[in-house]
Length: 139
Image 1 (cartoon, one colour):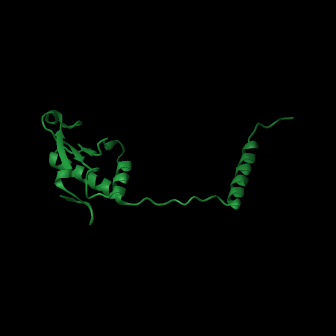
Image 2 (cartoon, rainbow, N blue to C red):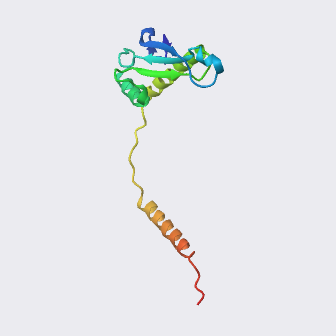
Image 3 (cartoon, rainbow, N blue to C red):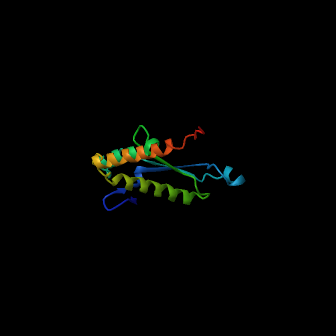
């Protein structure tokens, strides 16, 4: 059982782990040991996540979200399987924690007339400076 926060806990049946050979450095050892972890979390079927968290999680996860509503996280940073398992769980906790936060509501604002005027004035002044950089006529 994994505890995300005070209200959300993930049961063991919701997570499946599979192990595969990791890419990257490791010499001959990398071809023998399955140290990479693929963690599959059945997010859509999870009774502990609210519908709001599920929709946010789907948006945040992007390509990690499958069509059947599972979240797939891979970890192959370390050369040891236990460290990769812990890293995958940390990634899952971070994603779910991010999904619980409500996004800040942005209030659309318009620039003031004075700020628009200042902007245009500075642009014309800059244009005049650049116009003076032309060639000098020797008449």
